[in-house]
Image (tube, rainbow, N blue to C red; front, top):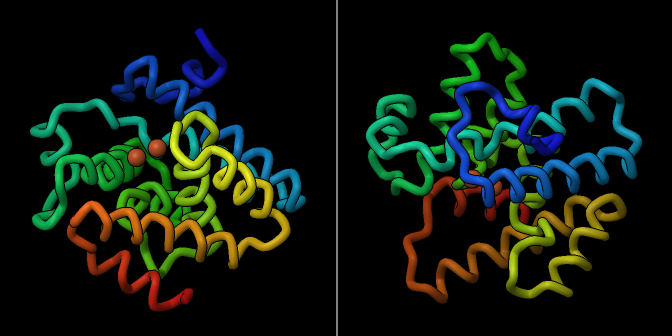
Amino acid sequence: MSAVASELPSWAQVSEKRVAHIGRVTALLDQWARALTLPSQEARAWHDAGIYHDALRDASESELRALAGDHAGYTTEMLHGPAAAARMIAEGESRAELLDAVRFHTVGSSAWGRLGRALYMADYLEPGRKFSRSDRAYLASQVPHDFDATFRQVLRARLEWSLREGMRLFPEAVALWNTVR
Ligand SMILES: [Fe+2]
Ligand SMILES: [Fe+2]
């Protein structure tokens, strides 16, 4: 069992491929937390955000809907954020920033502080994704030096992709963009 797999909660539902993604996201967050010399509690929360964000990524839609509650505008792919946060609360998790990071990682939130933004970036910039490898590696290297500008670029890239693909823009993502542009 990989180190990451042993850290996943017992209720996690993830394929092997997904475990590898979770490992890369968590490693990137750890790397940034070290470079930013975050206090140990904050670094721990960044680490846990990586571990938990996709813990229910491969759960069934009915299970996700039951856990996530009323998220009428959400597509199935977006439900695993609120579902994981709900499950974490049920298990006694109370770190609000961590819960908000996990809950909204699939859409974005303008209420996010540094943790939510870091998770959103790590999820997109982790090196296992096949597109725009060198651009994304460069952005990942910039996070400790220029966190806000890098976040803006990542958000812009994700919104641009949604527009190009003709996807719907979610109001949460638009509101977030309006706070950082
Ligand atoms: Fe996710
Ligand atoms: Fe992810």
